[in-house]
Length: 354
Length: 150
Ligand code: SF4
Ligand code: SF4
Ligand code: SF4
Ligand code: FES
Image (tube, rainbow over all chains, first blue to last red):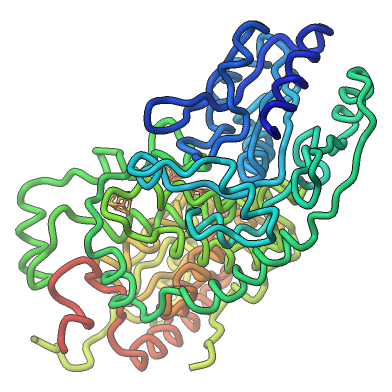
């Protein structure tokens, strides 16, 4: 029903010439992928709200707008985390937003792609659980502790409220969205999703407290011990958009043969491949201030390392230092910005509590 | 394990060409003593150091790293040192978050005329790091180093 109403919304917008294309999920044999459609006749191929998030939709918009504004007015239907990624990537000059309208909905969470491929859990089940005010056991860890599982003002343009209402409602999130809705002749509706947000944040608070990786070297080495160094986590991360990743630069990370032996002498034996922990900590140093918490790194891990516990919790600490919430705050990302008078506690030598 | 009893620590210094590197030279010509533990690397600005290199130095065996830049307002590239300060804040926060000793990464503003300050900071930091003992980050991802002793 929630999808049916969205398809009608899309068709009307297309008939009225308000949009020339839509990006939203479409089902595949064992999953869902994002699709771009440009004709009304293809709208029924879309399942705008899917039970799986295989990729981050904002990453797809980055590809589409690589050379400039989207060539046609495009409606993008995004989950709240994807919409936050969208906003973050706009700030990083990775997405040109002008010709894009973003619609964001109350999110029931997503099932891990691998779980879904084994046993389909349909959207209706997730929505029913959401309506009963319960976070589904079937959704990914990142979804259970999502800080913003609903549309947020000025993150995207149109909100689509599902929680606590039998009949979904549309409401504006931005000026652009407000104009769009009135051009469609839609009167904004209301719903109260406060509870949905609250129960996620309660979960998140516990998670931050219980799942922290501590213990320095042993803690991190143990946590990453089965890591294959495949870089899937980085490849799926929408914030890791660098064309050439530092950690894949051969001039830095391929060494002369002698070097390995010298290291083995000095370090009482080395692990191969080298620099596995450094990759993860270095990645955190590069992008942790802008991690939006989609958890796709964890979903991408072939050996099921709960990687979001590392990224999400360190990112939480980093974002606190800069008083920055990626995808929400309007300021530029911390790595693109500075203040002249700040962070003095990081200058010089300050001995910690030890 | 060969403990090299209380040996001099190794501290890798990334020093801006326009200030801290010049201060090191001045300390030298003024015959101010600073310890051989400091291994200086001259960089064109404190902002040219990817913070991953600070971790890299610690991984490769440095007991500590120190990034030396121009005083706020004096960077030759206007704002490089402010960006460097953000990066140091990030590295220290990541280290601390995971239970590592974040005092092994240090940021200092030392101008070209502050040979005295340079010598003093380096002497104090060396003593401090010596007292801290071996860094847990040293030789991370290898079979040696501290956490493999148990
Ligand atoms: S690090 Fe993980 S959770 Fe954070 S933005 Fe990247 S993929 Fe998403
Ligand atoms: S790890 Fe760093 S260099 Fe590599 S893609 Fe991510 S941000 Fe870019
Ligand atoms: S996806 Fe998993 S195995 Fe691959 S590099 Fe990331 S943590 Fe390691
Ligand atoms: S030139 Fe010295 S810190 Fe930038």
